[in-house]
Each structure stands twice: as C-alpha cells, then as structure tokens.
Image (tube, rainbow, N blue to C red; front, side, top):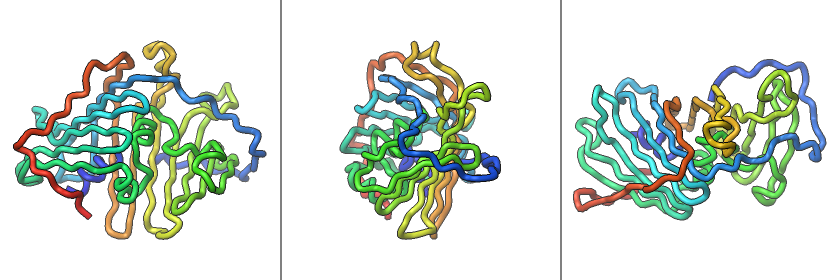
Length: 273
C-alpha cells in the first residue's frame, strides 16, 4: 500500500548540465512570466509506480482553479479496474480506496483535513500545490519574497537554469526554470523542484516537469505550455518511492460535474502513520 499512498498524497530527473559558475542576480531582475490564466483542466495520465508488484495505473483528474480537484485511479490489467477515487477542496481531502485482491482487502475511505495533510506529506500539500503540479507552476511561490512569510529568499543562475530558493521552517524549496527555446533568454519553463527538510536531512522530494508542449491554441490562450511528463521522487529514512506520469489526453473547457460518492459499503479509516 505504501506506493499507492505515495501517489495519493502527492496528487524528478534529467541530469542538469554542468555550469562553470553560479551567477547571482539582483532581486529586481525577476524574469519569470506571469502565471497561466486557466480556469478548468481535465487530464488523463499513464502512471508507473516503478514497483513490480503494482500494475500500470491510469489517473484521471478534473480541476477548477483554486476550488476543486477530482481524481480517479484505475489499474490497467487489460481492462481498467477502479482502485481509488477522491476529491480535494481547500480545507478537506477525501479518498476512497476500492477492494483489490492481494492489495487491499476491503473498501475504505479517508477524510483528511488539509492542515493534517500538511503535517504528513513530505512536500507542501494543498489544492494549490496539487493543481500547480499538473499545470507546471511552482508548488510553492518561490518567486516572491512575500510568500511564504518570514522566509529567506534568493535566486541565481545555476547549471544554466534560473533557480529560485525559499528557506522557511522546516523546508528548503528550490525551483529551477529553463528557457523555452534557444532563441529567447526568458526563463519560463519549470524543470525541477527540490524540497528538503532543514530538520531531517534524509527527508527530501524532487519533482521534474519535462516534455513541454505549446497548448495555447487548444486552450484558447489559457495555458501557454503544458508538461507532458512528470517524475516524482520521495526519500526518507524509512523508504523511497518514484512515480512517473505521462499525459495522454487533456481538455480545457468547463467541467460539468465532479462525481464522488461514498456509499455504505465503504468503511472509514484513519490515515496510516
């Protein structure tokens, strides 16, 4: 169950080119573009947990910006077998896990306050972070000195990428940006996010966004570019996990419904330690 909970909790890495020096930049030289102006996003992903005991998975998500994330997860074994479903609001996460032979013996569900999830997850976790994960925006606004408050903020060019760093108790968060093409000097595409603990050096997570595709036409300008692939790695003293996600279909129009229902066949449980 640990790989499954890693994916549900989080719902990377090419080697960075070596640079001769790190170039510090004045804080006024913020060259990142403005955030995308999307409202709705629907995506379908092939998921690989890099675990021989877990079959390939298919993740479907529906999102309304700053409001809701709905998801369903199915095992792809020739036919798709429902594994889990969930819905995330600003203050609550609800996850239902279906009965699966040899993996989960009963249908259970969890109802988790976002405030508790922030204490459990190895990375910042909330509706904004999850939505930003899929649309390729920083998980935490490392590009602003205002958020998070009382943090140490700086940025520099490192390994030919523009790196924004926020140090806030208890995390150090680094967001690496690349240029969209060799014809422009504007650092616009999030490539790698590194999150480490200032308290426990063994706890860290990386998220890589790659295979960026221009989707401005399909989204009517709501999203300029979208990462077609994500790689998530988490490491702690007890375990490590890797999740690879590949986008197969995407839509940007209004979403009519976010189906989520827990009937009497589900048993409520507390989240494992």
